Image (tube, rainbow, N blue to C red; front, top):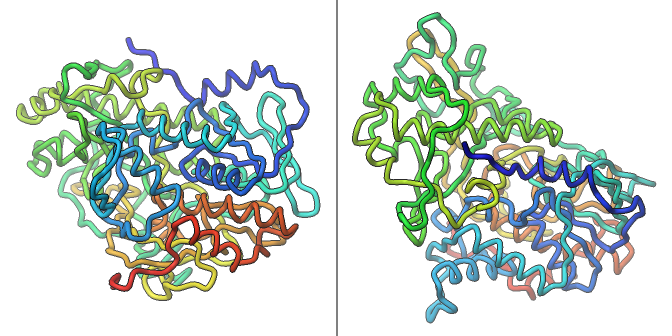
Length: 527
């Protein structure tokens, strides 16, 4: 029996036994969320001379970049737009993983990969160098506001933090929501912003496999109700999954054992697809990306019929309590662990698939204090701010220049399947997938600032103000790292000039961005 250390449960326990007093700590800038975007925000603000503290919910920094997402996304991004702290991290994590100290001919257009435990060390060293204090197990309990400004953030256990400017760098937008800033969850209808890619989408045809069991009940993984009308609004955001690492190196491998509470019926839909011949290999079910050292980065497969996501389970996450989120996270761990065991051992799985899956084990050198499972669930999208301006599909594909540009985004408009429904008694259908090659586009400063009448001293570089479609092109760690670094600069300007974050001088901010090595113009050859 394998016992996992659950990061949020551990944080809940630590908060309950906190030895901190109920007094308040004061800083110039408080950053909530030790994601890559939060890390760069903290370092950037500290470099500008601000006193800062970084508050992280779990016991580890780095978000997905230290929880299984181990590449710079250059297959689908224009890395000519990369720079600053993001570029420093990407290069350092890549070199350290490969045991190199430098590249004789650096070319960031080539894919850079790393190991999660190496990335965490790099992040911690960068934070230490910038003298940024990090507080772990910090679970938001409440926010105090006066005259439209956050004056105090309190965490469970009683500790409070005061600041002149706050930055919400969580994947969920928890601080933003607690501060009363407008936001949304899910996907807007096509007509809301006139987006051709908006709303419910049926890019893939129905699959000729019955979604019902012998008693006429829906199979696990099929959501209740009829397929919603195409292009209508949906409460469901992009799917989530565990993004873990596997290895074929026997010296670094931990056997994938039978999970507690394993139920092979959870995979009946997968069985039927295997038996039909629609899925023939492990690679048809799991996206396996190469990493150094005989490792594979294991992800939900974007166009898969059945993969690592759990349709519908992602929907409650954004508004859930920390305890509820841990239960959801546990569902994903159980499902993923069971899926690996199923592919490895179930006699209904073709022998060639079982043999292939049996080669893999969990990585001994990753997440050793968590049963070798990632700390974070892959939260592709949760809350999204609704600021004074909302980026939409047109900002990604057409009106791609902005006067208050703070970063050039470049990823495809990318959504995995969101939901799965019974189409009729003999078919099921997957819904939500988008895969549109994008163009380089400017992200405006207004996208990370709330409406002034809602909060005057909060910056939101992760849950940016955008439609669901636009967010599909923004939701990348390199993009969030750039936006985080800019947020740190903007916070320092707002403090020094004694202005609201919405009134930061753009000339001054853009000058700092360029000095930090982050481009603000789209490359000429980006069409």
